[in-house]
Length: 326
Image (cartoon, rainbow, N blue to C red; front, side, top):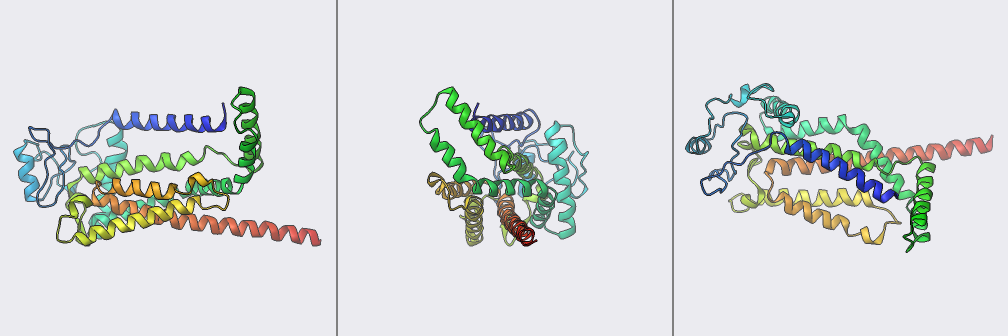
């Protein structure tokens, strides 16, 4: 089995684990009418969620929940919500969604704004996971540096699909990775960490009325940009989408920049940015804010790692020169 197939299999296993975790436990349930159409709050543009975690305060939302017979009276007030509130809904909700919602709640009450709370929680998570992120980014930078050697091996075995050639190619590539102390599979770690965090943020935003009823710079946190474009303050949603577009493109571009980049990959930042922008149009604005700041933190961390690696490289060169003079 060659390196590419190994990496694909690892990614499939990680993705399968995540799907099993999310689909077999509690998840967001949209509130629908008798025609199975999503029930929307006309004031905020928010598609309401049936299994909310605390009581809404918006009058229109309360009216709609009672109309469709959702028992909101048994729910705690959002400012009194606890991790143990409500019934058990599975590992996902218990371990990820409720604790995250609780932390956002407490910080939101302290800062008087839930968008700011989301950014602060995101920053804390990024700082806690920085050692893993730093290692992955360093590996990515090293992968760019050894790209000419890898391409040379791939060119050597180009068009040869027999088992012996594939085995030799895999062995030679592994020797290069070993030479530079690189684990080609480590790039999956950050994605595996970030994806469940993003999904947990999504559920927290959707299921916690205090968050999706809040506003930030006249942006309704529960409203999607596609709905926001039809409002009088549409310019703030346009600015938000532009910030996501620029930060996403720059983030991808930064991680892939290399003089020896595979020509077929040069358009990947544009393609990925377009895909993210289209997806963001239908996400709650709170998540769009999350995504922009996540890109921002990624860019900053990437710059720090590059600067650190450059200093380490110069230090090694300096020590070699000093040793040579001695």
